[in-house]
Length: 298
Image 1 (cartoon, rainbow, N blue to C red):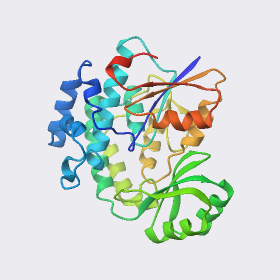
Image 2: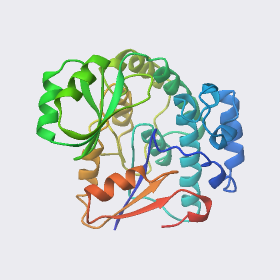
Image 3: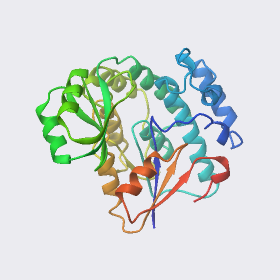
Image 4: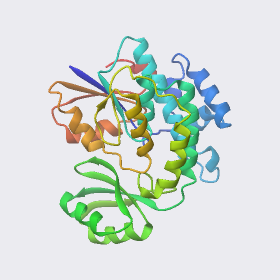
């Protein structure tokens, strides 16, 4: 049986998620280390109810969300490894790709913390454009509208029935008035992530990645940009460089994994976002979730 570990990105965070893993090995040390780098109490942020008046300490602030999710996911995956589990290959959704690269020993924990600080700050400062989720639509109609309307792209191709669009506010409004769908939901984000609107921050991120060593992965990694089972560190670097300004091709990632006739997908993280997508899309695949210290098994 092929076992794929998958790591979710922004949108899967939960208040209380750090409490669920605080008694796992290195948990307190890792939160303490990252809190010094980010100059805020990240464990406390994971436990606080959202307060719009205090955005600096809000878990839904992109700068906090990304590092907190990585901390929880990395602690869980290392506990799985310590218990004798290991994947056949790994994949991550957006931020989760960095966790996947850490899981495959491409990056050290310390490299990931520094890299996520740079990545999240670049994304927070990218104030151009917006994003919207589209649920229950005709794929052909959507593709035609995206081609016809300037300044809008598919940022997250999550499944046959759910995508996230990025673009200008005007372009998103235009598309929403023309498409037939169950839901069209504008997202509360600071920019048009995973789109050409991110070309400038993506270029800066690429410059930063030149300083980071990409080691040979311990097992294949499926990247968001041009999904394939990859073991070439140079190729993984190019794909991560391109991730910020290109779409997350998660539907294709699931199609690639589904080529294994006997497949077990394990979502490692605080929520079941990817499992939910997968169960609706891949009917014959086994899914498990690992999200807390009392669940380090599957």
